Length: 313
Image (cartoon, rainbow, N blue to C red; front, side, top):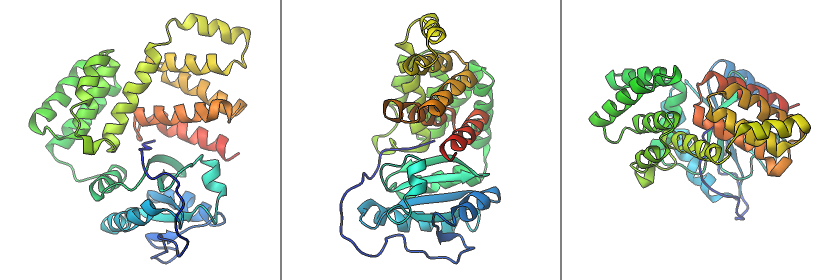
């Protein structure tokens, strides 16, 4: 999930909610509640993506985001719904999702959270976020990027790197190509090169979903590089299956070695055994992995579904 830096919870004046409903219950922009969340969000997301805007009346950045996200949703012309949830009046669902600051926006598809961001992003980034969900208009570069992503997924790093670099040669500000090249370099173990490529992203685009995904992939790889031999961690787990730190580190190492599904299983196991362990570290690490893998990756989709099942159990 793409959870970027944003508006932290701060005290503010009381008053009417910045996110007052602007649509009918069956419309594109609605207010939702704990009681109606299943129908408004989970069921509706089986027909089209649903953005859930978690907000509060005292939140200044929420007031900034509201007109921006509503404009972007209206521009999508029915391809996406916006459901706004006041966390003060309805704290149960935000609590289960581990939401600690507002505004936070989660995107639900087929009953599962698949993407998200925090903070009052500018209009261009909000539009790009929605485009990733509903699909922007394609052109030659989009097709090239899709081919590069396919090559990367299949482990053909040479082809992926060449295509991503070629797109960057045509569009130096193409953040999807830059993100893809960083992730390709990370997969090849060229972490210093990946750092240099990531540094080319403009400072004002640091919270762009593509840049965030590249940064997450690099962060996870650097964490794994510091672990050393996995045999020691495996031995610790054999002796004590409840050694959450060993299991956590082992999962990072497995992911770095391409064993992503095994890494997913171990981190989910920690969440099952002790959700609150190390300040929710396992769930947070899963979110970072999903961000690094991308919202449409099959493991991200299945992983979010499994994590959601645990969190909502």
